[in-house]
Image 1 (cartoon, one colour):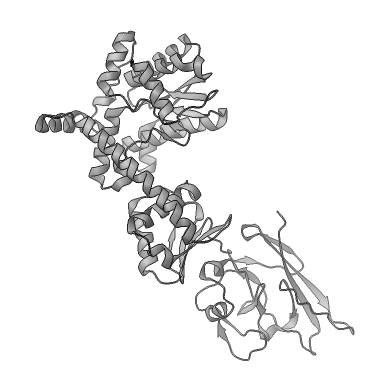
Image 2: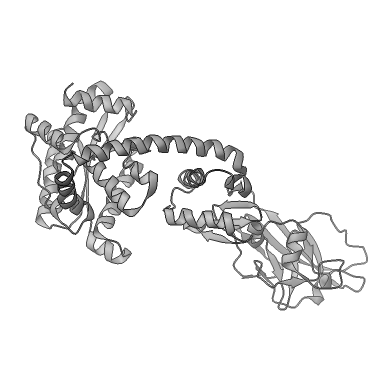
Length: 462
């Protein structure tokens, strides 16, 4: 089977393409990406593909980087393909974000490529990683202690991203390029030992092969395949476990039963957490360190303990529940002018107050939880809305003594993770209304009341 046939067989085996796909090819100008482009041109007609080329100029090698960009531009033009490029300052980006050159360059590359994918509606992003890259990645992940997921290495397909050259070694790709007479540029940054991957490629692997007498790349590649198969099984186990563990799921939160969660093997617990983050919190940079912290929260954490997530999310323990909140809701302190309406858009509520004169006829009280009537003259102005704070107390309607708001929430069976999203209407000195639940007995309307403050909360219609 020739090299081009192996390429297509690998694509079919891993279902990397669908007929009619729009494919964006990331081409650096190096041998791997030039071969990738050539192979795609061979299958374009049979798969009815639409191809385009993208190149990021990292600005790290001045004229040499500009030369690479010009080479790829001309290559794409000679094949009649659309070409997209961007020039960035990796050094400055890394200084601002406190990243290594390797990490900064990777972030900028994928930021550029993903923005093109989104804007131009491409179906697949094709990258030129091959078998040697796979082996290097697995070794680096082994050194970092990244576990089975890391030992699985680079997946042939993940979401929109495909790597259809993973079946081939660097030597096989070079042989194909020579047979086809393909030109490429020599990227001198591949010999820059400031990058860990280059040190692994140039220093570690040659010594490994010399010491063992074996082709280390093949061994690591086989290890990666075996770990990938094991990981697929663990992902399946995690999906099945999640069906038993999950208590509820909504657009705002996911709730797990901690006791059921902890009844599974530790490795399944980890994969349950990986699955939740990958599916529900894709923006979260998940690490083994973060997974270990979440496991400790489930095993040993107190009710109310939490771990902050990116973009305002939070994972919180609430008794025997582990709650994943897409956004931790709390209410910043804000003034409440009488006769005005406030929109609490973060928690989807609308608050309004209105001053009423007491007349001969009685006030008709309502059983609606969102409406209350208060004795205006007993309130210490100005009023504010805010969230629960530790130590808050008030006198619930019908009682004579102050009660801790924490204890009130417990009596009302309000879970820990919802307490900060309940607005408190407060005066200058104390809580007036736990909105939607109970007013302070001190501010109730009595026979002596002359002016009445009507307060009302409604859900904002989306």
